[in-house]
Image (cartoon, rainbow, N blue to C red; front, side, top):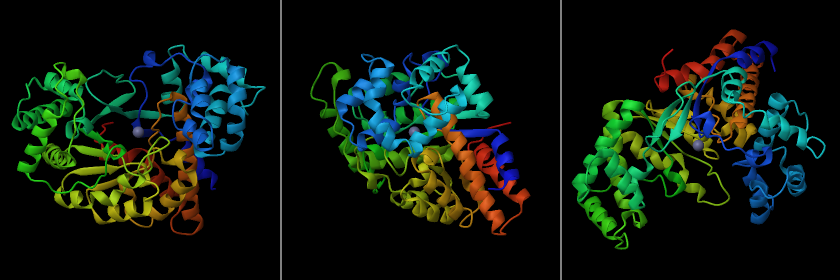
Length: 421
Ligand SMILES: [Zn+2]
């Protein structure tokens, strides 16, 4: 790696395209460091390596002390510590808490240092000072507040296009101020909701590939209306709407997705979409294939689509779509910890496939604050390594490589998401 490039990329201020952090620091749950580090991601590696549900629950619970937890964790830690998730946690332990190696001898000291992070300054220390993040785009589900010192928001449209419970319907009715008795009512409630979202942020987020395919087949309004009326009647007849579980026909979602995308396109919004690997220990991987969206990209040429997670393991497919469509952008959020090697390889490929102006290089995608630090550390390292390779191959000079590094981490996401200086 070329030191000059590494040093430059290391000190850059960055925009973080995607997070799941608590919206305010005081909302962080008080726990121990093992519970925190297993909040998501790394626990999935442990379970796929053979950890039982009971062991996993014990590690996330509060009945064992930190040493007892370490005894349960140790055999799985040994075989998983080199994964991207494991690397990120080790970097956090070392660089935030000064613990070089996580083991039986250090786990108590790590926990003690971690507890000191509940001092009300941890967001500032980790996000601003250590990670040099100007702002993070927080994934949110509604009208809850958020700390504007650290975040802007992306509003989820999942429940608008796939209402699954009476609670979803009630929340929409209340937020939009519409009593929904017909499909027409539902569509106008969605429109009002989108206008409300647009006042807070013009970024939308769709994570629906966790529950169905991204293959949105065309549907007529009549088909959608029939499906909507079937949905309203599917609620089990409870007087209490909160308890209703709906059957949402895919046809309805297919129609609503186009309806919302059309409105969002008119407003000049940008839509972040989950593609590729699904978090957790079981799902349908192919539901999230980026090429399922191909026709949508054709139908909505002015809608900006920001496709997440390098589409792993469909990253070359995602690259081809990004090369073809001016309205498709790629986002490396989550990617550097899912597979550090795949993230480097695909960045290497993408830089010679399409304009580097279409790549956002980092999104932490963490629920735990310390993970964001570990992830950005790995992202900067990956980007610097790939750019160094381009200089060594003679494709560009160091100055150009540094310019691209800044574009990936700051200029591109600032432009794509309309983030002002
Ligand atoms: Zn996410």
